[in-house]
Image 1: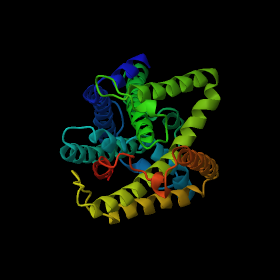
Image 2 (image 1 turned 180 degrees about the vertical axis):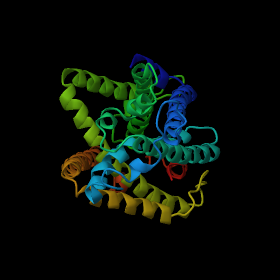
Image 3 (image 1 turned 135 degrees about the vertical axis):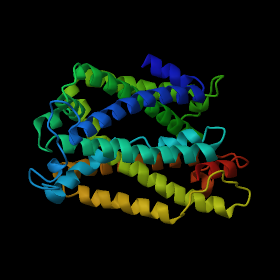
Length: 348
């Protein structure tokens, strides 16, 4: 936590450098995994029978548990993709958002197709989907089938690096979200204070404090806290991505009507891609309702969102009363009129 705090308190370029090396180590490990898995499937590992693709249709056939199994896995898949929205958040602080966003988005698409889907394909091709070893630890199980020594230690190191990378990225994203709330007077103004590196260090430290609280709670009650947090992430991401799509629609339309706003990057296919994203998110919610565990999770998340909305409404009313603002005071743009068009363009 101390190391990640120092990274996030440094200039944003340092954050990018650390994430690069974190990602490099993760990618290198997955490349090795894909190579070993492909060798197992093709029978290129000495002394190991070729697996082929028979496991994809054996043991009950393709999609052996039907639509229910698909529904049960959806929120876990969403959880696995959590964090890709940080691409646009970090690009907004780069020197060339146009180049940075395009490069990052292409990179995300390639990584999803090759590393995520590729890894899942290798797992279910090498071992049956109902294999106990696959359920206990898929990466270790697949590499264990190749009789690679020290596999537990190697994969433990990879997992630690992946978790550190995820926490580093989420501290960054959480601090910038807190900063955005402060700019719109929905969080204390002290959060906007920056250090010499132009980093909102109060926002970073606030995010780190919550991380430390989570670590302590997990240490005291690991069987309770970790499952609860994992189950909450998937459904919460659906809400987050939904609001991102809606915000993009609203702010892009607002920016297009203002001739003073110059957008460095314009999303192609607007507004159809945003509407398609919302439709797909709604489809995931509908399918997840067929699974009892996912249904409970979605209901709990809905309750949380309602509670946050009520608190936000009360905060807005209190701010209007204290400042004597007019009916437009609830705008999601900063109070500073001179900077509003520029920020609207950046957010769009």
